[in-house]
Image 1 (cartoon, one colour):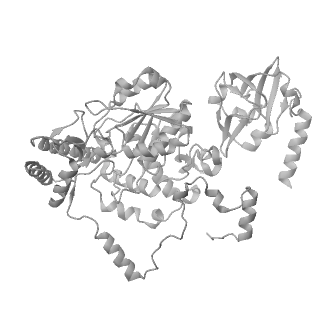
Image 2 (spheres, rainbow over the protein chains, first blue to last red; image 1 turned 90 degrees about the horizontal axis):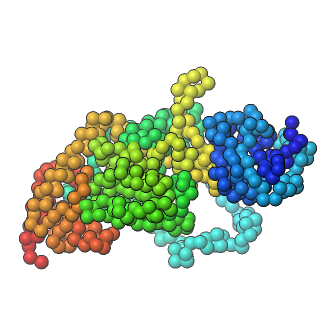
Image 3 (cartoon, rainbow over the protein chains, first blue to last red; image 1 turned 30 degrees about the vertical axis):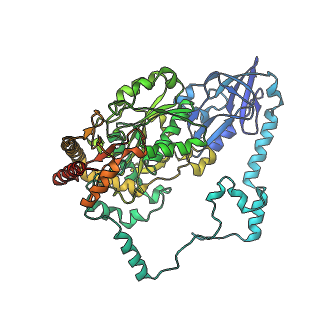
Length: 132
Length: 448
């Protein structure tokens, strides 16, 4: 379910780091909790973002949720496909519906985040809490 | 809804949770002088006959039989009794905010119609379900421009209603929003020469009013072109909505903030009224307040719902686009019914009569020796006259003839000491205009 080469946050963002550049998205769990996504608000290319701070928002029919950055760095690219097709976040959250690319200040920063296994355990616990 | 007060121990527990010792500490941000130290001096409870007497006495304080030439943001217009009978229907008068679409189709349909009318009149693509009034609508429009541009300064024309500017300044004070004023020209319009490249490049928006506080029309299209060149937005505020019956809609403005009082809402004591924010569709997610949208139900039938509510405060808390979480539904309904009664031709006719009567009044008054029209800009139903002596003195004499004279502008514009703002709407009989002219002539012929 959750790609092994990604790292994950407790706020349900994922990041895949490749040669110092991280691709960031929201997880399948997050899209499922949000429901139908209708709008995505993203930062401008060149913007500086900090780990743990909000850099944009995802709006579904139910709510608007902030997206928090897993790492610190500078935005190098945004996924403009989402402007016209925000629903891709529901259909392909780990693939074509990535949100932004960021040049990490510290290439190793993402290593401290949860790996796929840990994240799976984390969301399983969440699901259990909810059904309890 | 039951009201459940807290016990002292529960209060203490709640205070403990937020790390405070007393309720008083919650109010530290309110200056000492404004905090109530003793119980409000409320009158003893009155019986029903006493209450009726009390209100009769208040009603007698009104000024029946007086002719008023005051406008300046609140206008006297014809209104039909049909409007009152319809809005007083219980389904409208007592209905709560329409969160539940399945039981609120009447209210939601009315709001949708209101939004549609506001778009048609302003030439904008989307209008919200209404705001408190024109001044708060303007403030919200400015905050919206700030969010859209990421710039924290706003240029505000001095020809914008002084009270609207005060409301904006109140909000701006604690939001880190800088306000820079732009003066007016000899014609009483925005000084376009002051709109330098440097000023505009750091500004979120230029705020103008048209017709402006002096009654004059601004060149919205030209101003929009100037500000857009530097990436700023144009906010146009309208205090006299009936002007839209004849004035070109401000389609080039990015945000229109309007007072809707002129659409069938009686002046009362200056409120409550209804505000409007209208804008381009691409800015809809930064628009304050709520929006009724058209959709289809599970059987494919046309229906209405509150839409984009996910940006509102009751869902998004401190991250809401604005802290208005409601609208002026009943007054929006008054405006909607009023406009539907008038129709496309009616609003045009009403607006034309305003222009004709105001032009006539201005010409008559300017014939009086020593009186001259102060600004050359084309106007709708208000104009500024310069008198050879203080407007307050003239008004003191006019009131003996049961005439409420021009608004003295010196209060808000120290440089306009002998200037008065005259308003003449379609409700003003020609004979009353002549009576004002005669009275002013007589006052000025009397030696001081």
